[in-house]
Length: 270
Image (cartoon, rainbow, N blue to C red):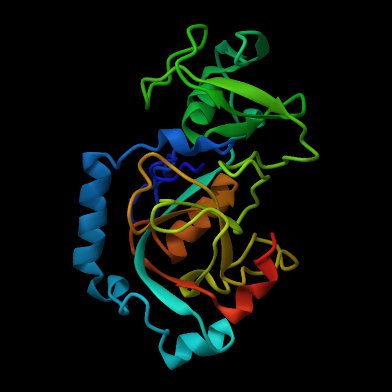
């Protein structure tokens, strides 16, 4: 589920806009957290000092303007301006410190991991173990689990095949992929819907010259308890990618969501 702002956690952007993305990278959608007061203030300050960053609005249901039709392949239908947040995939290798156990839904120990890693995956929903393998959200209210500081929930996990789920799984049950999978309010955008986001068309997929760029096409493959209304929580994969996006398309700036874009037709059967 993504948790994104709701999945999630948001890292600090150069603009101090953090993105909370609680996902269930494993199906993280049950845990997104609202922005803290400091994050909300940072978002409002960004809007005040960057008045032109937000408002690129279109009438819901209408075709995009010509410049966007050109990008989408000549068509599509605008759903509107959506709040944007990001979530990623914690790695145990990036954490150290006192160890705690993470458990499966039967309260059997999966692994002992640094507490900071536990505190990240209980919000993000999934992550990778140093020994190899992926863990993903399985169950809330586990009596055996450590308390998650951000959500006040006790989360149990499921060990997944890293070959099949290298980045965890979403609420759809499918493997999610960086800069391809998003979480959304399923009452607004149905699971499996292919969307086009012009603001993310052309953003780098990494730092290397061979990493390529995003084509702006995404698939709704996750959800989040706090991902509500016109809000998309975009899975970035790694915190460094989240940081890059925060510099170019900051959280809460707002992005234009288009469906039925010809450019994204190749994802229709994903």
